[in-house]
Length: 97
Image (cartoon, rainbow, N blue to C red; front, side, top):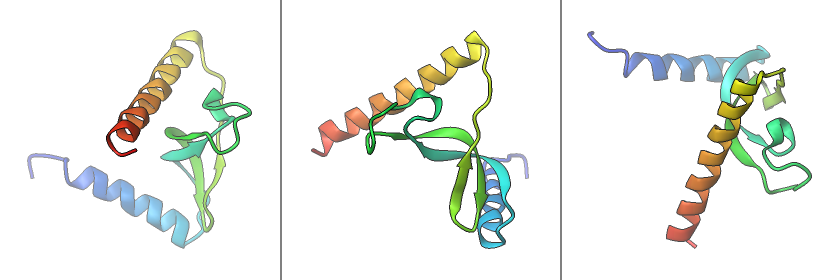
């Protein structure tokens, strides 16, 4: 094939669909809606964002978001990622008010 640009996303999608359809309760990195998790929008109900986090997928979709201890460098990277998501949402809202 020479590239995994098609295979890898398809394989990941299959894993996610199978976990949901067959209620496998699999832990899969996912873009999941977070508010209090990872400090995305603490105490701001309905003001969260979809960010990449480890989540358990089952028949109800995202059934649980997994939290874990992070060192300072990991926390910094996570906060930067969340900040980028917020910036992109803000830019999109400006384009499409």
